[in-house]
Length: 276
Image (tube, rainbow, N blue to C red; front, side, top):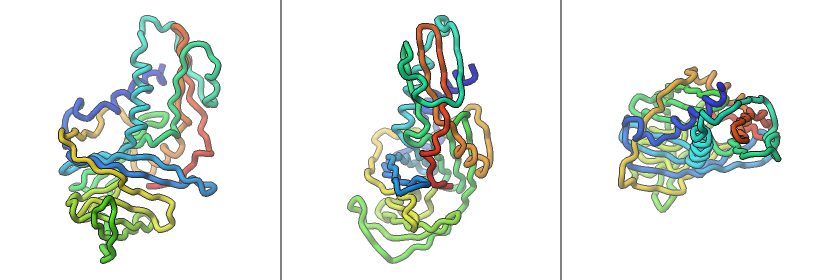
C-alpha cells in the first residue's frame, strides 16, 4: 500500500501552483532545448524544458514529464477504494513484466523526460530542487552569487542581440549568451545573475547545452509556488545521490478489483553525466 500512496501523492506535486497559494507570479515563460550526453558513447538526449519567471522567483521543469506524471497519478486517484480487492507490489522487475497481462496496464518510465523541478529565489540566491524517485525528495542549494565574467563578444538568438559571459561553476566552465533587451535576471537550470535573460548556455566540453527556442508573455500570470507536503529533505550531496540511484519507474496493472504495482529495475543504459 506504501507504493499506492506514493503514486497518489504525485497528483499533488503537479497541480498548478495557483491551486496551492501564490508565492510569486510568472509573467514570462521560456522554452529551452536541453541536450545532454550519456556516460558512454556519443549519444545525445534532448528534452524541452520550461522556465516560468516571476519578479523574485522562477520555476524550471519538464512540462511533458509533469503531464505524464499527472495522467499516471489520475489513474490511481480514479480507482474506487470500495472495488479494490487486493493490492500487490513487486520490486526490481523489467518494464515488460506487465506485458500480456489481462486488464489495463499503465507505465511511468523514470527515464522519459526529467522529473526534477527547480525553484530559484534569485534575491536570496537559494535554489530548491524537488524530485520524485522511489520517494519524494527535496534538496536545498545555497548557490549565492554566481561569479560571471561579461565579455564584449556578441551574437544573436531568437533575433535578440546577445552578449557573452563565462562562468566556472562546480568544476565546469560555461559560456552563456544573455539578452540585455530582456532585463530579466534569470536563465535555465541553476543559472541566473546576468543583466538580461540567458538565451543560451553550454559547458566548454559540449556535454550540456541549453538553448532558448521560444518566449511567451503570459497574459494571465501563472502562480509559482514551492510544493508543500511530506518530503525527505537533504543537502545537495545526498539529494544528488538519491536521484542518481533512482529506480526505473513504476507500472500498474488493474484487473477487476486486483491491482498489481511494479517498481521497475534501474536501467544503467540511461546513465547520464552528472549535472549538479
